[in-house]
Length: 165
Image (cartoon, rainbow, N blue to C red; front, side, top):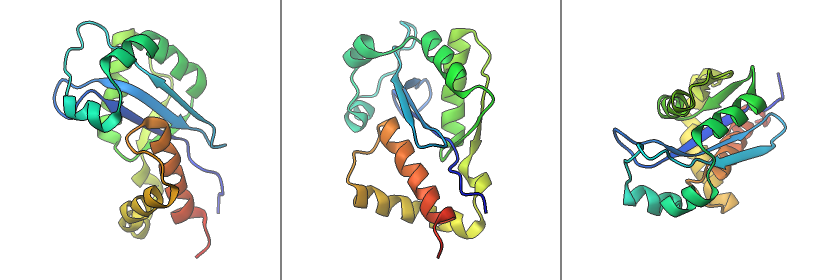
């Protein structure tokens, strides 16, 4: 059995529906090293959901002051992730938000995103959410920040796939 951890990616967004855009990207590499970046939205990215702000604890002001532009974000992602496949437990959302960053930056994405389910057996898929939920409680870290989320997702994979039963 391969004992390496898969690289995991997660994004947080300005809202939950149509028109939402990425406000934070985080990823954990195979060695568990975590990177995360806030994303400064361009002026024409207008959608904002106050409920999402409460959940993430990320304000528009924070994004303006601390965020990287979509181009800076895309360049950093390509530099750090070139040629890799990263895994997401919310593939459809995360890949569309990554696409929005690269479209805005007018750059080609040099890495791929796949669903974490492609690495799991049906039995592991059935246990995924319960294991993840218990880890949130056990580790006692805040949810809905990309860096924290990728750490918990990687640990969930470790528990389900690499820990002997």
